[in-house]
Length: 494
Image (cartoon, rainbow, N blue to C red; front, side, top):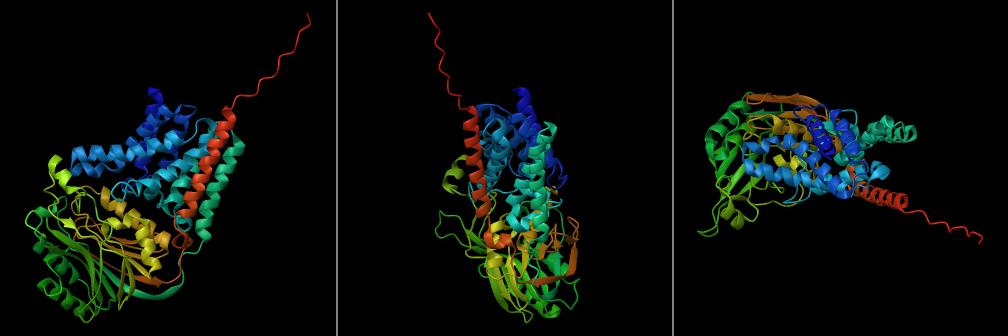
């Protein structure tokens, strides 16, 4: 059993190395092959332990950044995320049925991981590595879950070939090739509605500091200095999340006046990330804040705003704060973000812009809702300056590439210390900044109005297919394990 658990752990480690910042995408297939081999005919309890080892291998490395903030919290989150893969391994039927059941349970587990708890944590998922490989275009049809499914089916093909089960290997390989080809020929949001000259502004500075350790005035001035490197003509300028920090509404502040002046100088719409502090409702309560993307028109007027819907648990708010105040130090998050509502859409002179604020870029539904609401270009104002390593910025760029392919939209991402990027609808990174450097990116993006298949149908069909495949796999497993009827014994003459 120890060797099987070790094989599962090694498989999870291979998946982790397929993710950014490593990005060795073929290793994900090898990781799932290891899991398939380890599971074999093992009973459910052992499958649970093997799956847990696989999850620990994947998330200990894939979510390594958590340790920068809290070692006990990191251990708890990694264990919780590994539990999803433990459940996936346990619920896949043993024996031959696992070649159908395991891809299905992995897809269902990933969908659940993106929903619970506290709204889910889809970081560290297999699809973030595959967007850089040949399967990436399939996201136009089935989103990030389709990429995971294709990796799992590719692993079935390899496992079957190792066992010289050539028909199964050919069938699985054919499914993978069909999925990859479908992504290449599927609608890609290609109906153009004009182009924009855009700039993404990165103020630069040191990384790895908590918000309480940062002078917000210095951050704003760095952002303003970087923005002044841009020159007309421009249509749209994107500033990062959380580079304007004020008490109360932003409109009457000196910071808003400076941004308005910059919009007039450039003759462009400027979208900037704004934190608006709110006082506590009563002396014993914590204060709040609104995390918004605010748009200034070329005339310097505030014309649109979107407030972040998907907040970061334990980063922007403390769920169940009264309880956690008793058992942990919550001083790093002294106030709770007020959640916004509705799709992320800014209707501006530059066009209708879909917005995903920071963490929201990891959630496919936020991009899908923005495009369905009319977004012709995606913007990701973000702030990953608190992370000392490159892991989170790299995974964030990968997630932005996924959202671009899924939605068939060009995308502009801006971060105060990186990574800022301009990405086309095929997921190609047209321009990318250097972490920590003061830098501006400039390029031409296309506004688009048509939809991809994934934008239209979402995850529902693939989840239904996975559930049906799992039920079928268990039916086959029960039929295989059902004892054969006993034949009556022949009577002997006496």
